[in-house]
Image (cartoon, rainbow, N blue to C red):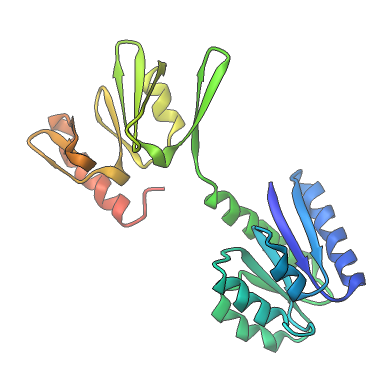
Length: 236
């Protein structure tokens, strides 16, 4: 669920923005937690963690831009959308890595595009996970934590970066369809996370802490190409 903060010193505009957000969320069948603030100071003092913050630029000190600067100094990585009646003020927003700006009164088409892109970025930021079910129990494992997967008989073994191993009954082919393209099938019995590959030599994939897993001779060239694509960020 997206966590939103709306910060504006005009109550009637906060009401209008809240209504527009509710309409948008209903239309796309999504939910969000919304908190409203009447000043930049109230937002800064809230200690809240937000995915998206709407900030009015023209507010009593600290105004929206100064509030954004202070948020960034605190390590805030929220998407920032500035609200203004003076579009020329928006050029100052580049220094705080603004996601977008909206001119008052709000244009519904621009608002929709802004929210569509915000949801897309938010979804990309969410850690991708694998849900492993064993009977009535389940374990949620972030894909980034899996170094490699191997199959032995009818069991899969997920080797994680913390040194632990999760095993369960599953097909490697089914697992391959459940993970993203950072995972490469280097051998008929192994999938390896390219984030952790340190090299390849003598038919072995080199992993952190000196671990190795086999790579089939016919897949060595493909592994090298996959690594190059992965390093360029074009794999997923």
